[in-house]
Length: 299
Image 1 (cartoon, one colour):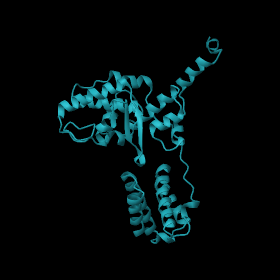
Image 2 (spheres, one colour):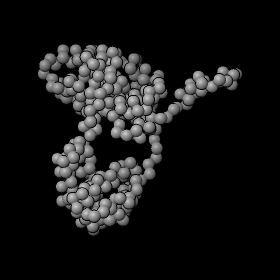
Image 3 (cartoon, helix red, strand yellow):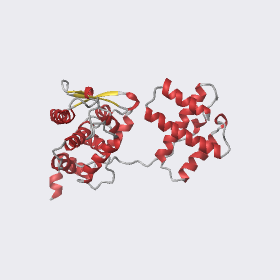
Image 4 (cartoon, one colour):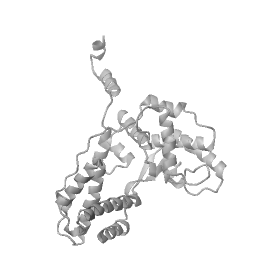
């Protein structure tokens, strides 16, 4: 579909979408075009809602998760919105397509005892890599930043004078995150070790590999996975778990939901509301503190 190429260029040069978004939409639209070609529907201008519904059923029949299906439908919906804007079509065939229902999942996070073990009792070697890895863990937990934000962090984004870190999030939006004196100390110690190790050979990236190159996502994932695995039996052991842990800790300690939204860089409050959950321990704690006859009822 030549129209897809035009749309990808539109995303890149006019909308200036993030590269990851462009790649994801391109892959999703190619998959859509392949299915339509295989079913005898090569002309995108002749696609109707019934064709898209069949495609959705095809994806679900092949065990694709509802969230992944909805992401692909979003790409197709945006594509046809573009065609309508360019007056290639009069109506968007996706306008009558509903999203596939997705099961609600609570975010996976570390509990305070597990977190204390990882932050205070894990054995971090007294090497550049050991200091770097400990700094990565602390930074994830104390700022809630995303993996991509940490990987692309530069020296200039860390402002020790104002005790803040600026990060570039989704859709290239910048947000400012405050950092504690303790985290400043951790970051300073890492910088001293890094500069001692590599001198002025490093580039602008804050975190480097042991060879002095820019750090990359798989390496960071392995670091986080290793240290979570040492203290917890949770299934997921990714950097996003520490982001969830950051948000959960703030919420459980009385932080305002809107403040958490800003710190996480969410575009809408709906994305933040997933953290409005309480485990039994938290509920039990609140009950004992708040109920006037809690102590009597325990006897």
